[in-house]
Image (cartoon, rainbow, N blue to C red; front, side, top):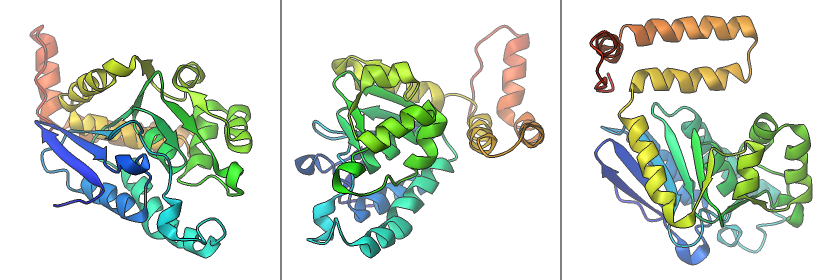
Length: 260
């Protein structure tokens, strides 16, 4: 499929989605959200997604200019864009059948912050930062931020990010537990690709069940989580990868998972 706002490249089992509007710091119009959603659906042989940004930014947020002069005050237009484009993209990220790694190479603001934090693993260059800038233009956080942030860093820090609208640098983000790791800028893509490849060569079906269980556990009680684990174990336990893992353990060798 041809895309206008993103680049999609597959290298074996890893598919890289690059937000590709560097002249706009990869500001995300509804079209980009739609294209990211479509790329996530078209998995084919993909066993891990890597998301990053072209140029010097990851994503500077929704493209207000793309919505015209009423972009700030046009509440109905914002509601429609969220309902039709941005929210479906976020749901597709949450429901991806394969792991997602984000390599944050600069500002991750607004919806860009949400896209990054929706990944299973977030690596950020030390010059990168995360920003909930909505309060600065009289809007409220969207893209799932009000759900994600309290769960990632707790109520106090989530409130700080949303109500003060200040930048959170990569190293502070790591200290807070907001992201997986802060790395040197020049090592970002190499480390992110290595992690993506590690996930892509893992037991894909089991990893998918882990993703599902983690998301459900954030909303359900302990007993329900136990049941969901048992259901997931039943599914994973019948897979070829589980058989390979067991045999490799007994034979004292490294397993070769095929994703089935």
